[in-house]
Every structure is written in structure tokens, then in C-alpha cells.
Length: 341
Ligand SMILES: NC(=O)C1=CN([C@@H]2O[C@H](COP(=O)(O)OP(=O)(O)OC[C@H]3O[C@@H](n4cnc5c(N)ncnc54)[C@H](OP(=O)(O)O)[C@@H]3O)[C@@H](O)[C@H]2O)C=CC1
Ligand SMILES: O=C(CO)[C@H](O)[C@H](O)COP(=O)(O)O
Ligand SMILES: [Zn+2]
Image 1: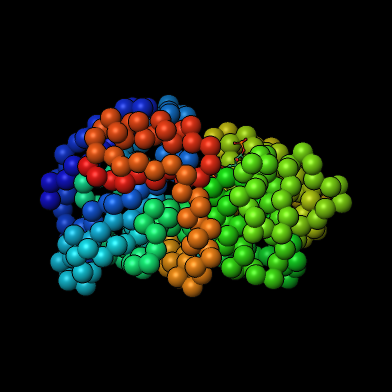
Image 2: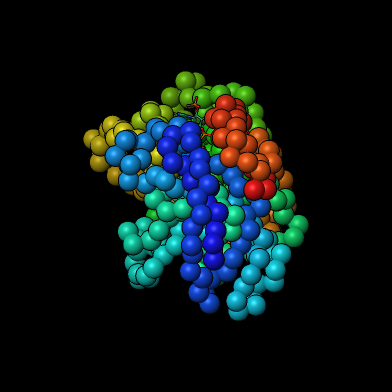
């Protein structure tokens, strides 16, 4: 198949390249419909990654969050027109211990391998998860981020001690919001507290039990378990506050990506017997659990629809560039493009 792939060739510069692709009987062809931007994409778009990383990974099609319509299935199992969420992680082996998203041999789209900004995406058939008809399409575009939140909370369930009284989330942006909606489903009896930098963003977390600005947290406040959803330089102070406010033997799940190493007060981590668990990306099972939670919970779907922040139809390279520039200045919510190239 000859495919048109919309690749970032240099920071802020996209180019369409024609690529010959081999399709096997195990692949399906999907036409992308709604694509959503992750911070990882904006770091490539703006050239915030180290020069050596950019040299190694570009040219590359961006975007690892999206839904599309099945165009062709050589095995006729997916009907043409079926809306599917595309799993960006492609494993090439299985391991009894290491999950597919942590296997070094796996290929992750838009991080060294072409993402979903293509005319057609060829997917191994197990990388497509059917999206129910009653899901909002723009919300469905960021099911990948929902699956990362699901993966994080699944890891927390497996690692944490028996104390579920208070779950604290640091970060008042997209990942914090998505993870917060999931806490309400996965830990319905826990108190949910959000710690953020912007009152206007914290106001969106109306379903949380309590929200705090990070410069106004009561000294005596304690959380049972914590999730860090900040990233960048903000991770350092968020982790420091988590260590200050988590109960002894609590678990902190770290999700925010920082370009430079951040300092951690290990003396307190040791003294309090804390567990720090890093979480990155997700696998098929997390996508399926995400879709199941959304299917069973209309209120979660409604909350996540409120996270659609900036939307536009894109048809040309100029539209794509303008869309990414718009996403950079978008204050609240996910940037979702209707892919019409
Ligand atoms: N592990 C994974 O698989 C994934 C990781 N990520 C990463 O998660 C991070 C967050 O992504 P996203 O939610 O989309 O980003 P957003 O910018 O939407 O949200 C981050 C929010 O956290 C706030 N913040 C910064 N520092 C602190 C702090 N110390 N305490 C509390 N809040 C703080 C930011 O405020 P301000 O803007 O003022 O700094 C911002 O409002 C990024 O690094 C992203 O790359 C995303 C998806 C998956
Ligand atoms: O966003 C993510 C998953 O949804 C990950 O943070 C992202 O894949 C990290 O990739 P990179 O190393 O290219 O920044
Ligand atoms: Zn992402």
C-alpha cells in the first residue's frame, strides 16, 4: 500500500511523505478521524527534546492519541466503518513479568516510530479497540490518555497498602483531570483531593472532595496514596510535597515527564518507607478497561467531554501547523483535531 504520512521533519515543520507499506493478513487498515495532542507531541513540535533525540527520531509522524474508522480487514472481522481506538504501543514479544509498555523491544508511535498523522494507519488487529456508538468522538480521541490513567491506578491497586482513605492527585491539567475522574470509579469510597497551581483549573474538578492550591496546603493534611501528574520542573516540587503530605508506607505513582532529572528527598522516602512507582504509557488491557469504565459510567464520559478544549478540522499542512500552534496557547483541556486530509 502507498500511504501519505504527515511527518515532522524539523521543529514546527511538517512534510507529507509517500511511504510503501506491506500489509499482512494480521493487519487492519484504519482511516484516522479524530486525533488528540499529548505533551510529548508538543515537545517534538517545539523542539524541546535534546538535539540528539530530535536527530534520532525525526522525521516522524506525531500523535499517539486517536480514533479512526476501519477501512479494510483482510479477515473480515472488523466491519468497514467501525470506530476504533488505536493502541500506539506495538509489542513484538510477550513476557511473563514485564508489561508490553515497558518492553524495550516494543515500538511506541510518535516516539521514534510514525504516529497517527497518516492518510491510513496499518495496525496489528489486536491494536484496535472498538468504541461504542454512543461515545462522543472528540472525547474518544483521547482514550489513550484515559488508558494511561487506568494503567496508573491499576498499578496503584497492585502496589499500595490497605489504606484507601484519601487519594491525592498533584497536577490540575489534563492528566490530573482524567486520573481524578477514574479515581471516582476505581476507588469510589476514597476521598479525592486535588493539588494544583491554578484556582480556575481546580474549579473544573467539581466532583473532587477537596481541592487545594499548592501554596496553601494545611501543614497537618495527609493523603494515603498519591499520584503525580505535573511534569517538567513542576515534578520536583510536586514530589517534594507528596513526600511531605503522604502517610508513612504510602505509594506515590509518578507520571509527569521531565526533560531534566529532578531532585528527590530520598532520606524522607527511606525514613517513611515510601514506594515511588514510575508509570509510562499503557497496553491493550488498559485500553479495554478504559473503554469498559466509560461504557459503564455515563457520568465519567460527561466529565471527560468537558475536557475537550480546542478543536478544529485540518485538511492541509498549514492547517496542521496552525492547529499545533493553537494547542500550545490553549489554557484548559485537550486539543482535538478532526483529521480530514
Ligand atoms: N506517564 C505517561 O504515560 C504520561 C505522561 N504525561 C505527562 O504528564 C505531564 C502532565 O500532562 P498534562 O496533564 O497533559 O499537562 P498539563 O499542562 O495539562 O497539566 C499539568 C498541570 O500541572 C500543574 N503543575 C505544575 N507543577 C505543579 C505542582 N508542583 N503541583 C501541582 N500542579 C502543578 C501545571 O501548572 P503550570 O502550567 O502553571 O505549570 C498544569 O496546570 C506531562 O509531563 C506529560 O508529558 C502525559 C501523558 C501520559
Ligand atoms: O505521553 C506518553 C504516553 O501517552 C508518554 O509520556 C510518551 O510516550 C513519552 O514519550 P517520549 O519519550 O517520546 O517523550
Ligand atoms: Zn501521551
